[in-house]
Length: 61
Image (cartoon, rainbow, N blue to C red; front, side):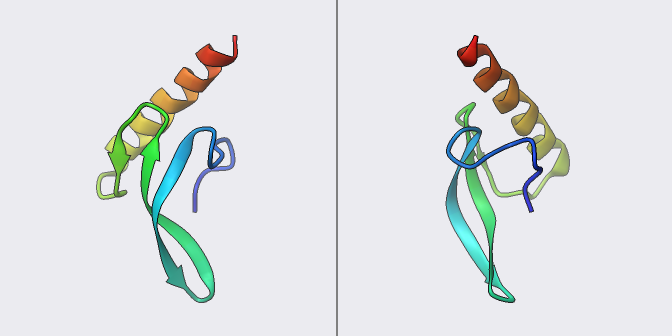
C-alpha cells in the first residue's frame, strides 16, 4: 500500500494495478517527479516519494 502522506493524482499516477484478494494494489506508478517506479528497489521508491512530495509542496507555494 502507498503511504498516507501521498495521494494518487497529486503525487503519483498509477500505471498498473495487481488484483489481490479483491484489492487493487498499485504495482507501477509514475511519480510527480516524472520517474516510473515498479517498487523493485525500496531506496529508489523512497527517493522518488521524497522528491515528489517536495515538488508538489514547492508548486503549492
